[in-house]
Image 1 (cartoon, rainbow, N blue to C red):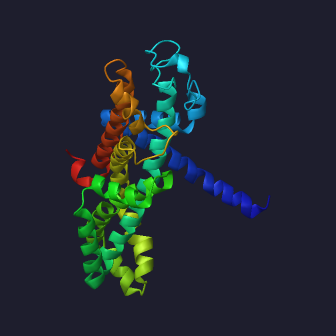
Image 2: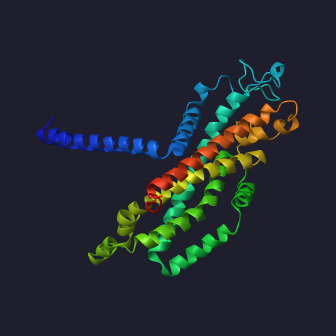
Image 3: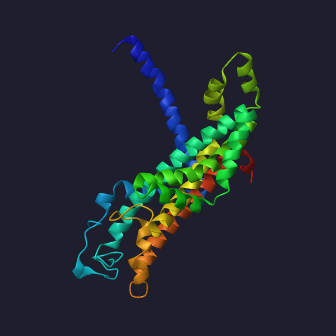
Length: 301
């Protein structure tokens, strides 16, 4: 290895170690000051692990049924019981976690990212651009999110990618509205004026200075919106407009046989409902904790 490479490695290692140390201290501070947020974060991580390693976490094939094992009550063999087709409900919920989290993360990533960029352009440029984009956002906000998602899925058709696109569009105007408010505050700072004085372009100022200094609200919004996205996907699947069968989905588990056998097999509604409630509540609590930590106005409260 050359002398230049050795110098670079020696110079980089302390910086990486310092960042890791700061990250560990930040995590310990978060667990100490936000106990509810820590519990929510742990549930979120557990759900992510279950969804990522679903084929290994599930005990049986979630799509394979056995007519001789229909509507079996929870037992040592079937932890959450079986459904009307003899499929293991625990394996269906684990497989549904992968679908629900996949839809939620991609829809939030697309919707909030595009909305945040539109809000940043609207707030920074102002004038006619701001007027046109804000009227478009107002028109989209006039529709309730679930009704807008239903309309979009009805037009686009069933399918995983269609559901992701429909849910992402419902989050776009909210992200744009939050981004615009943050950018209107950030662009008044002195360092932005200094960049204009030295001749920096608007694109460079937005990407190099405005965007990095407005990321905290973006991350908070995304974490809070994840729970809503999971609930929206479950609602669409419950109405038969979400992920098509035979793929498992938490909302689909609540519809169909769960309604027909509610009295004789209540576990068909109890366990999927608990899964939806716990994960949505965990993401909401975790997002609230991030807001309390990153929002300077709430640090002293």
